[in-house]
Length: 446
Ligand code: SF4
Ligand code: SF4
Image (cartoon, rainbow, N blue to C red; front, side, top):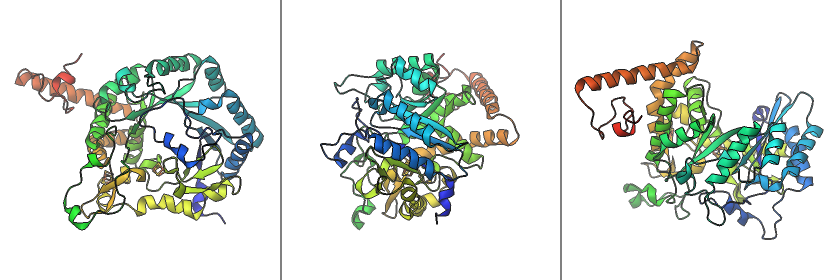
């Protein structure tokens, strides 16, 4: 008998070309997965594996589920060519039961998207995720090709092509040490480029030297230096908090209901009492597995390693692997391993300790398990609290959340008038609108 959680449906992220990519982005967490397989590996999902995947993934969905999303990632999935995805569509038509709506999504660096690709994606209603880290100097810092050239021009050319062909897409922006001090600039760039859906992904690269076991008692006394635990590209915790706050304030002023930022939506769902849907912000996880090109299924896209390999779909069906007791435990561990400081945190309802992948910071009792970005998350939650409450109240009253924008602007106007009455504001003084930024970087700017 299947466990109760098997009634919830599951999600598989497919990697049809494994970690192979045409770029060489400095912070990519997936390029290193080549070491899991032999050097002779072809790295291309065979037709046999694709067929098994499509059939089993559909069969694994409970009868109550009437929508299914096929998500393709890499590496760079467009390296498989359009014909591979034509085959995906054909197999989905062959196996989808009556009434099941099938969606496709594809995460790409965008470099290979020509008109033929865009026509195909538009015709079959693919939802695209395009990786873009902000304006040229912020994007090109780490998103480079194999010849060490920046990719901004090629990615933005593809973005314009996507717009022209009417392809549905959102932007995935990695937040790293180089762009994280520019939250407003990054957000404005994306919005002014016409992007309506944005996901911010913090880059946290743990140094391999950081131990996962508790340090010796004498070392526990000393506060550990977080800089020692991560790479120099990783966003700093407070920096991440400031980034989210800066983007949020800009969004709150102008774009509520018009631009959708995943972290803001998730927070609003939590404050509205609905609960977040993104695994990072839910109490448990484990319902999103990752499928490698050869049919190996892993517990999560961020745990593609020997220890978290559930099995291979040519030997055991997806349904059995994904609904196994072992995978259920993986998901439950997210809550079971929460440190005490999270259990007592007033923002637990919105954060739930965030993703276990990055819970490697030592707490005051000397145990590892606190999320590396905790300080940033707390800053963000504290800052948005009154606004989330206000938006949740608007929604509960049957009004659009965008109503809070008027309140925000009115407050800023009042603050400016008060400040003007008190005398001129110095360039480097805190902005009277209360944003927390310097006047010269905030309302003084046109
Ligand atoms: S904000 Fe920090 S302490 Fe609070 S739940 Fe999140 S990670 Fe835990
Ligand atoms: S480990 Fe992190 S990314 Fe993976 S399912 Fe859990 S919360 Fe999501």
